[in-house]
Image (cartoon, rainbow, N blue to C red; front, side):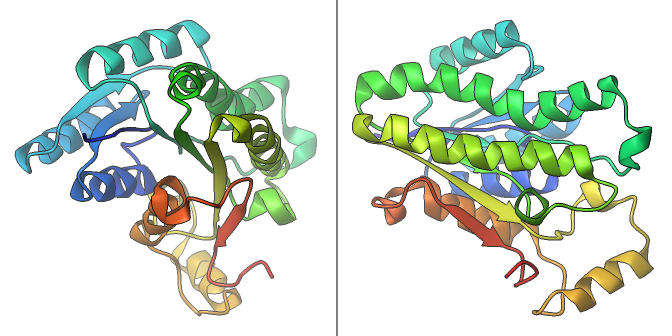
Length: 244
């Protein structure tokens, strides 16, 4: 029987790459979006045209009630979520002394609370089934920290701590929890960077280039599936060697 995977933030570069890869591997795919519904629906139709069972779901993942409603919709359409990819997230570049409580709420709501709410809801059926896999998408800045991205780095570091702790708690229920920490990837999240900025970042990367969304998706799929059946609580850096 085909398993159901939920990819949050699937309208973005990494999320859409994950959704396509899981569809190609024969999974049923729930394509989540918050604001970019048009892109998510376009992706969902693309997957449906290829014979994949898919559904587009929209929710503010920092809102517990919306998350519950989203999981109910997925359950009624595709079945219980057996693989959860907590990919939704936002970035911000600003001096820490200029940040506000609103910035904190924005970043921690999208990058951490979203994963907490979705994981809590997914675990209900995973624990009952004594099976499941959760993959969180953090960032290399969650490992090392980045100047002018203090709140972003802190939220992604918290996601790493969340991963390690939940892996220990969920392990006895045969549920694996892992994390991917991408480096600089060619996505819209980096659209604010100039070509010169991207060139510098590529030069600072030992592999001398920027990553592709598909390369992050490959890592996510590895950790999410039985290929990594004895792997849990791990943080897999996919950053071209940027953080060593």
